[in-house]
Length: 86
Figure 1 (cartoon, rainbow, N blue to C red):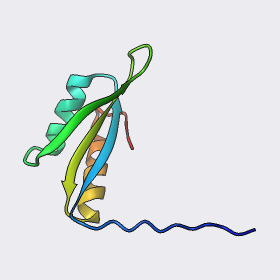
Figure 2 (cartoon, rainbow, N blue to C red; figure 1 turned 90 degrees about the vertical axis):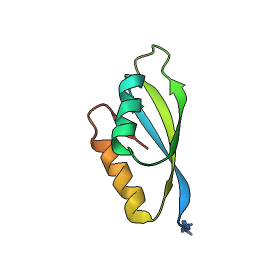
Figure 3 (cartoon, rainbow, N blue to C red; figure 1 turned 60 degrees about the vertical axis):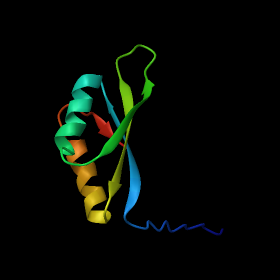
Figure 4 (tube, rainbow, N blue to C red; figure 1 turned 120 degrees about the vertical axis):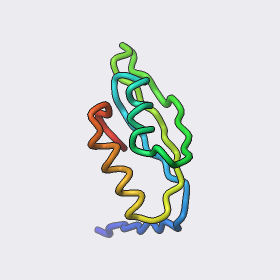
């Protein structure tokens, strides 16, 4: 059996997209602003659950390197108004 192993190379700086999931759009948007107060970013509604309990937002921002990319991921993930970050 042959395994396929793919290496993804990211060239920095680049635009990066995070998908954040939570239950309150206004609080999620404020959380994103709390994490990135001095950075330009774009945020758009991505999806809403059929019952309306959860929604996801796509956040696009320019990251300068892997440390920056992972740092923003961690800050978003730890924010109390965000349930999940992909």
